[in-house]
Structures are given as C-alpha cells and as structure tokens.
Amino acid sequence: MGHGFGAVRELRLDAYADRFAEAGYAVLVFDYRHFGSSSGQPRELLDLSRQHEDWRSALAYARSLDWIDRSQVVAWGSSLGGGHVLHTAANDHSLAAVVAQVPHVSGPVATRSLGLRQASALALAGLRDEANQLLGRPPYYRQSIGDADTSAVMIEPGWLDLLHRLAGDEVDEARLRSQNRVAARVLLHMPFYSPGRTAHRITAPTLVQAGEHDQLTPPSASRKVAERIPNAEFKIYSCGHFDPYLPPHFDGIVSDQLMFLRTHVPAAR
Image 1 (cartoon, rainbow, N blue to C red):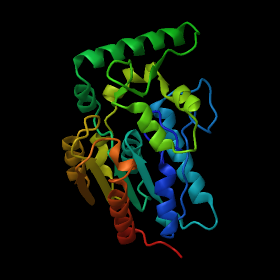
Image 2: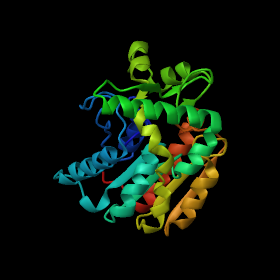
Image 3: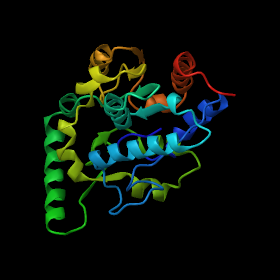
C-alpha cells in the first residue's frame, strides 16, 4: 500500500491496513523514499521515477517473504499512488489484483483542473527549484496542501483540520506542518505524467474508485481509464478527493475494496 502526493503512511493508510488484516490479508504499508519514516535526502523530494522504483522494491520484498503466496500479491494505491499502481500493473503482469482509489491518471487533466493562474504559479515554482538544484542550493518547497490564499499545490479549505483528522494522534502539529511540503521541481513533471495511457496493458483485475466531486483527480478521466482496462470495475461515490479516508465515506469505500478482494484474492486464514 502506498499513499498519494507528498503523503505518508500515518495519514490513515493504517485504517485501511487494519481492515484488510482483520479480513485475513497480510499488509505491507510503506513510505516513499525522502518521506516519512523512509530515508533519503533532501527531505520531501518527490521524484516520480524513484517512486516507481519504490513500488517495485516493495513488491519484490513482499514476494520474498516465505509465508506469502507470490501469486496472490495485490497493489493498492491512492491519489498519486493510485496512478503509480496503474503504471506498475501495466508492466508487472504477475499481480493478482489492483486497487486504485481516486487515482491520478492524466497529467493534462489534472493540470487543467488547477486553472491557469495556479498552474502557472506552480510551474514558476518548479523552475525556481530546478535552478536551485543546478546551483547546488537547497530545494525550493511548496506546501502540499493548503487554503486558496496559500501557495499550496492542492487547495483544500480547512486543510490543517483535515490533516489532524487523517493523522489522528499519530503525528503532532509541528510535524504535520513541517512535512506538508514537496520540492517544487516535481511540478514541472506532473503535467506529463499520465499512467492511464498504458492502462490497456493491465491484465490483473482492477478496481478504480472515483469521487463525484473530486476536483484534483476528476472522475471522468478515471472512468475512461477504467474502460480501457480489460478486467476492471469502476465505482463512483458522492464525495471529494480526501473524503474516502474518513467517515462517513470510509466504511463504504473500504467495504467495496474488501468485496473486490474476496472475489479475486481470497484471504488465507
């Protein structure tokens, strides 16, 4: 299981993992390098290629465990992680199933959803960070999530309260604020990252879940990608991008995931 843009596993991935474990599944949850509990300098550097490598490494480790059935491994990702699992599954045909929750599927669609003003500001921030890198300076960061009057990549009113609800008692506010950032250079690459383009190569049963009111990863794009996957289920919920992690939407969404998994990957008890 891997999280989304700039997110760490403490932001409610444990809630999903607990439900899967209770149902009899072994669960491996990881942080991408440069984030959370994983190593890597500079901190909060989001590199798409490295995150793809992290997925391959996590899957290889899971398959190396003696008590794991290598033919029954599932990739679960949310938001940017949802795009990563689609990318991974297009190249790894030994996966038993894939769950992509509110996935990033199209760079152009996601960029257009930002609007010209915000997209332009983020591109300039990316150029500034690239210049810092060339000059050997520390990264130039942008806030991952914030209010409309901030320079954040993702705009969400009441963002700090949202992070508190996601983290629960696991992370204090100082850490929430300090880790709520990404090196801006990735913003030059996100418009060109479209894992949905290779979705037709996915052979594993795939569940794609979208939010009807999701403005960050629009559901229309997710639906089109699901239609190109030979063995896919598409479900849409009356919620926004961050709602699947929390009540009242969490229970229904994770229940659908468990129903999908029981159909395609029966749990071992």
